[in-house]
Image 1 (cartoon, rainbow, N blue to C red):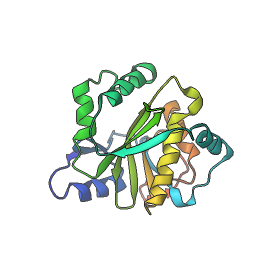
Image 2: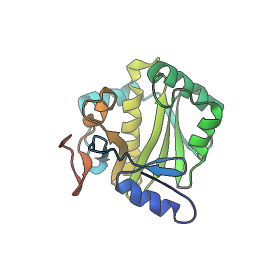
Image 3: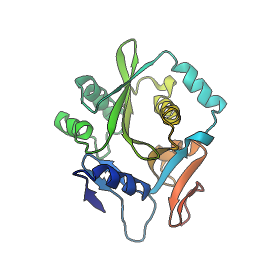
Image 4: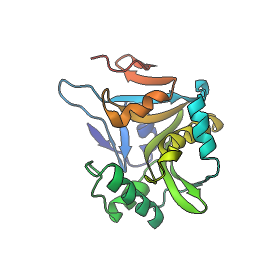
Length: 212
């Protein structure tokens, strides 16, 4: 299912649809609707109850040398170059594997809602980047990518930890992480950020995983 986001009501519509399990891609909000399957489960972190584990503290310490800067949703060549390296090494069989520069510009800049980009740099070199949407009760991580060669930094985990802190500082309650699918190796990391909530037929509930 999908609908277009446009006009003065785009932000309110995106907000309501995100709460209902939709995700945004440019000016479209979408939600999987497969017959006899509800494997895609929307999840969010309750940031005000989130506590750092020892492993999370280690990730923050390892990345304490990085600088972070928030920007308007404007694409940069350095971002695209990093994305291409990330896709080629981590997701070369995915739906975005052949993304070109024009498609990347559209992904970043075609937003009818309150969006921003956070860049993470090591000695002025871009090594991680995330596109974020502002909602009424939180932030939504639309898409993130990072330097795949720096595995020791756990940059994917670090960006989530940093966005949890930014969400708290903004006085918001939730960080939306998109979909979780049981048994999907690439999505297992989301389970680590407790307390996690999942969207059920009865609304948002504490995360218990698949119920089918």
